Image (cartoon, rainbow, N blue to C red; front, side):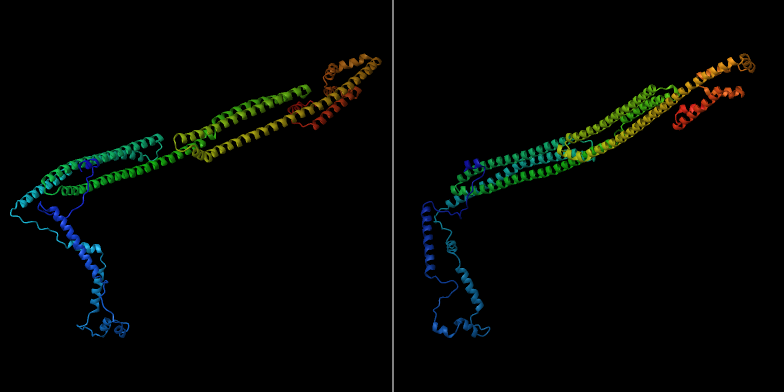
Length: 616
């Protein structure tokens, strides 16, 4: 028994026995055998009597008289007697009491044979009267052994109680230590967790901070569970140690009880087994309580773990939402900033383009005015073509400059859009680096919001560029048309002047011919007339410079001034044929120039200057 209890730490279980009897040492086994034989014989006789007089339960054996019964009809004689009797008749049997008696007899008749046998056995004598002797030594030995037995049993129970008190400290101390450790752990984590709860915005937090919180929480949870396991191990070790001590006590007191010889060894073992069974029940209850305590502690720790895990997950989701909102709002602010909506680089390019346009336009204006400052008669067709080619070259330079400037402006706008795309990728990478979301989720956040803003900005830039391109193209077309019209105008003017130049040359030739004819005639007349009076007349008249003026103005195509001088010189000489021809030549030239003036528009400056000189 001791070896088996030490191996399993569970004490053996015994069954109860009947009342102890004291018999003389001579005929103990013979009397027990005879009693058992007598018990079997008595039980057999009792059962045989029952089988011989077996009666149906609840019935009285009667002999039926069929002829007499038929005279009463359907009722029996007893029932007929009940009907005919008077109420409260003492001589007549009470049917209610009869029914109750029959019911009770029926219930008793339903008892099984085992119940009847057990009742008969309990009715047998339980005490065998010992054989009387003249000496009472047996009684005194019996009383002495009884006292020793009871004293040993009392010591046994007292030692078990002392073991329980001594082992109580082994249970209380680890429990108090665990409570202290759990309380300190709760306070440390609460202070650490509430520090993050005070920061509502969570902008300053990063995913590393949450990972640190997770690591701290995981480490704290593992430490708490390790403490719970240590408590469970300590309690189980205490149970093992108590079982070993109880096993030792049981072994010791079993030997002591056997030495008292108050009971047989089998009875002693039965008693010890009974006590061991109760101790085993207590040990099993303690182990069940320890397991239940471990289960409750782990369950409470799991509930705490799930609660704080949910809190941390909620804080993390709030942080993710705040970070997403912050990144989206920062990108919107970036897109709505003045640096993106009105890029300074574009403004610099526009100012540079305008400055260059002003300088080129100034050069073109100077080139245009260079033709207007000269008289039309001094220009040739080659000079006009050269002047027009220079003007076209200036227009090309202006157009090329505009195209290059627009390319630079477009490039600056593209740089701004590229900067926006880089900012978009930066925001997307921030979402991934901060572990706010996965790459697919980042795409879902970026695509509908950020690309739409960039598309609107790009469309706005394209509208501006298209408008500037359209305005510049319109300006180039207008400038080209104006320059072409101006060139055509000068071509027409030169054609008219060439035509009049030819006419003037023809009339000049005619004038020279007429003058030659007049000179010849005058010479002939002078030969006929006396030359002296004529030259005297000239000297007397004071007009000695008339011939020189005539030759000078005829040489420089100013015939109309000669006519005026001749008219002022002498009214008498106007009737001379050469002078009449000069007047007709002057009038024809004036009419030709007036016709040219009416044919051509007077918008050019050299025509206005010609009118202001009043050469005609």
